[in-house]
Amino acid sequence: MNAVIDALEFRHACKKFDPKKKISDKKLGIILEAACLSPSSFGMEAWKFLILESKDIREQLRPACWDQAQITDASHVIVILARPSLVAPSNDYVKANFSRRELPEDATLAYIDRYKWYMETEVLPRMSTYAWCAKQCYIALANIMTAAASMGIDSCPMEGFVKDKVESILNIDKKECEVAVLVALGFRAGGQTPRQRHESKTLIEYR
Ligand SMILES: Cc1cc2nc3c(=O)[nH]c(=O)nc-3n(C[C@H](O)[C@H](O)[C@H](O)COP(=O)(O)O)c2cc1C
Image (cartoon, rainbow, N blue to C red; front, side, top):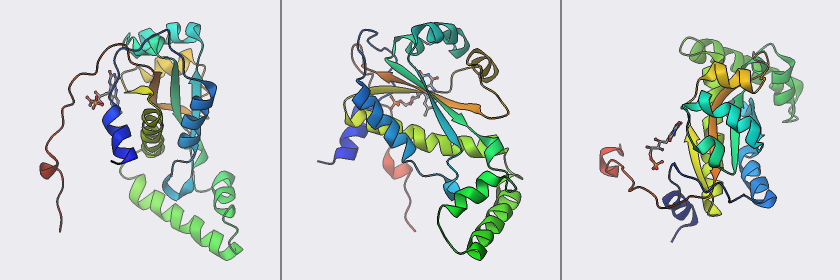
């Protein structure tokens, strides 16, 4: 009926992957394209996608991820990294990002001012820059899972990990990046557990 709903119906948080099945490079490329096409607040794209294929690395990582089998049994694990150090309003990266729009210089400067105001007034009193960047990373996470599901590829979003340990095992330079969330991708082994959802009428309100 609708390709997006079909994909969302197919998707579930896959707990048991078939370790023998691999995602093709072509399909992985499409999934990564969906990640990179994701929107981010002010277009900051303060993220990075680290693809873990190596079984060795994933064996090392698994204990830091609550020993969850998805880490080693999935075809691939994508570590979505937030890049809070990029988005300080004074950073040249911010100016370069707004300059991509090729607006007149005064309009670019006005954007930077608006962004500075927004970060200082609305974001930083409520959360860290890391948390703000991580929120954007979750948009990419959703697109990764939906793109995968549209091609019959299963996924499991994963917050069940010890952040410091994962960063240390993966040698992440925390001045550059911090782990936001992980997603395991591959093919289900066995069935899907029944989906639990609150009734939409309890969640949707019109005014
Ligand atoms: C951000 C996020 C983190 C999650 N972390 C884990 C995890 O570490 N391990 C796991 O098995 N499931 C994890 N889940 C899966 C949820 O438990 C699951 O999505 C929820 O129970 C709804 O089930 P469904 O996705 O199969 O519809 C996570 C889901 C989200 C959105």
